[in-house]
Length: 395
Ligand code: MN
Ligand code: MN
Image 1 (cartoon, rainbow, N blue to C red):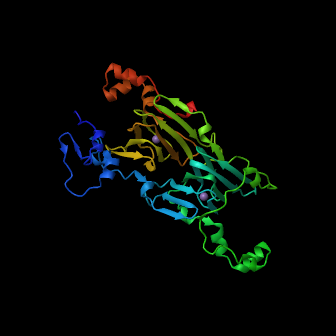
Image 2 (cartoon, rainbow, N blue to C red):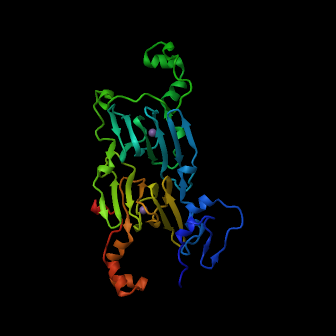
């Protein structure tokens, strides 16, 4: 059966807005419409004829998440409340002004981070009293294990970063804050605990700010605190962009998991870059769900959910995508600049199964019996060629 041609993406640029029409299927919109949203989601407006069945929503943009503003910056989150399918991981996009402080705090989930812009100073102390103080910049990661107290402060240029937590139910608004705790402890107990008069706490901030303005700290060395127990045994930061990428046809990949970033025991990540016209080949992940964050460019993904079900979504910078466990998918660059995104997993290791590799390593006649392909196509299938395949073995 000849399928109607897939959506002509040029149509999304038409001055009156795209129409849900493919060949002789569909019809123009007569009722109310939201043209900017329809332009951003051409594969929802006129879904490919291969899409079928009911699949939950797999997209939520930080642009439509509530942003909480303070004098030190802002933060917005995409959690299971925004994207109900995303039970494994939650994300926070945070901005700190120069000197801006994300208050000393801790939480039940582990925190993984990717620096998007600027620089910041991070601190942490573990249960053995070993400390960690470091400066991080664009393309750097950090990982604070669950329950470990930490802080983040913007340096001269301020900063913005993505935080990923290993619990979809996490909320940045419900962390354990230093000032919040002290404000809710009787003054006489504070006095006894610290061995000082009650009056010493008269100036405690009565209204904790969570993110607040501060003074840009001096050089890293000037902020050093020597712990009798020493520093943490494994570094909590990692220079992902300094890592040599795995180069493949159409793009490149950098992977960080517990094999090369020891601190990241519960969260694995791949930074994927796909050139215009390129594709992150058909694949799935044998270990867990995938949480995506789109950094630049634009792309689309079709998720295959078995039983004849599939749905296609369009993504751009600032969007979160999700792929439930084991579902087949690809990510195609549909724009004219590099598509860059993070794929994240609640797992100590990164793993994927490439369709190309699977078929290439399976007896030809067996594959042929399923797909009824001609000799040339079979030859191409048998030639294993990673197209943005982030295979563990090549890292
Ligand atoms: Mn935190
Ligand atoms: Mn994937």
